[in-house]
Amino acid sequence: MEEGYESRRGSRWEELDTDILVRIFQKFSIFELTSGLAHVCSGWRAACCDPILWKTLDLSHMRSSFIKIPLEPYVYVERRSDEALTRILKLSMNLSGGNTRALVFHFNLFLSDDQLTYTAERCPGLRRIVLPAWNRIKKTGICKAIRIWKDLESLTMPSIANPPYLLTEIAKNCKNFKELKIMGPFEIFFANTLITYLPNLKTLSLRCSAIKREALIKILDGLPHLEVLNISHSYLVEYSVWQPQQKVIVRELDKTILEKASRLKRFLTCMEHETCVMCQRTENDEGIVRWYKYEEGEWKVDEVSSLHL
Image (cartoon, rainbow, N blue to C red; front, side, top):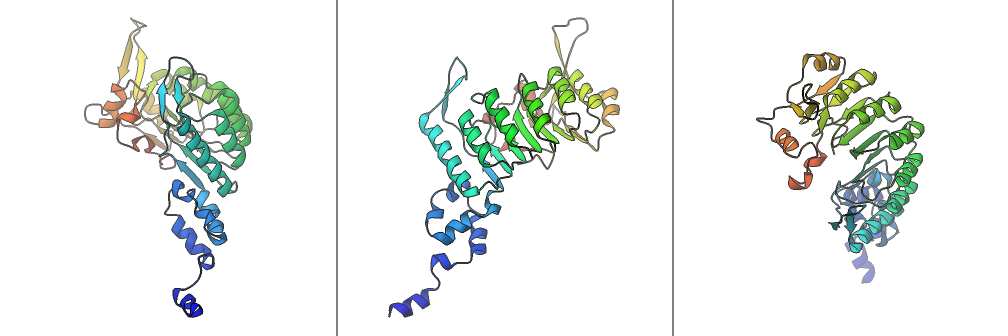
């Protein structure tokens, strides 16, 4: 009787084809994959560890629960929120087997140095990283991670006040690095640093930013290998000759910039501040877009397809 019932109901869980399981698991979120599926049986664990599931580790839906504080790091992350992130990272790294090639964090996720280092050591073959807010990431932590990521090609990051230490590490350790996206104001100092340390950069996105006009001129002159430049929904800033302290917003690209940009394969622009909602948001937020105020996922958008999430 039992034998007949077994034959009617089909194969046992561990006998299901692994390829079929992997196709099913590809539909699952990172939270579902780490919820205990690997403990069902040996067949499910084998499927959960398939490299194709971990090629991209997307944590872009995971935010920190925090409060702002007046002293560095200017945020206090709730313990349960921090523990939840650590748990997800440990489970993901255990299942991925070092096969993660792209890692995406939410901009409002406050990653600690320990969490960053732990992750970097377990996905040394990373090629693309979308970094979260800098608040709890120290110089030592990010530099150690960059030294591990020898194959890194693409970085998306919030703007940073002191870029040389980071770009120096990239120049020293990441010989295939070619793509950078900066979320926030772009100053002359940053432009000079890029020219000095990453002269072979091919793709640069400065969308939704306040860009110093002189900084834009510098990268057009100083990055000879640049092929793609995205300044969509950004605005240019320069200072009055007669009143050096007075900031002037430039809403149109002049002949000099257009001529210098003509050598690029793609020069992506949108400065329609009267009709474009995203251009208006950038200007209203003074070049530091408060993404939390807008549609969920809007921060992931980029006109450069390789940077779009």
